[in-house]
Image (cartoon, rainbow, N blue to C red; front, side, top):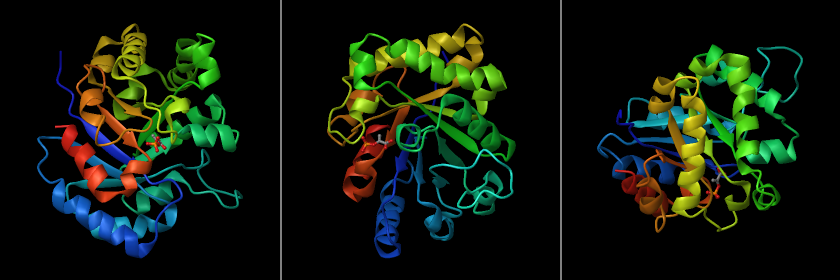
Length: 252
Ligand code: PEP
């Protein structure tokens, strides 16, 4: 089996300010260099992309955004296109975060269109998929995750996943302090990988699948040790320098 390098990506959500961003990024930069091939990225609010670019350009850290428009350009007030993110040298963009799905009505088809727009511009989409607590309790986790994944593979073909990252984020674990156990997470990650392997074993083997949902310094190592967990998408803990750095170190 090919060895996949790990990725730890911070999702700052709607947090930050130029002063605190500078000290957070400076600390992360200083403490995460040379982590045995682990990639580290931060997905910041749009207004801070120029700041991320100026602090991180030429370093080992990558940066990206948390959303984008599915449209290329036009009369879409308040929206941000993939090309605009490329203008600030973003590498990644999160698509389909559960907060976008739940609070802004993004369905799986819209998310797939965003995925497509991101890739067309040369960005690496981080596609978030995951079930709610009700869905888990109803025993339909795999069905939900498959539907969210299939929306992208039906539109784009399975090979499109080569230039993407998946993030399994059980909605009930996001920002709640409830982490999926390593066994629960591994089970869904293995399901996702096997579903992709049914179409292309090579794509499945090479694909990074991150876990997200209340990852902290004290649970990261155990999660990241599971065979199908290739790092994490980190919300709250990505805003605390020591915590995020420790999570990055756990991905070694
Ligand atoms: C997220 O927002 O993607 C996330 C995983 O948040 P948290 O780590 O705070 O649960």
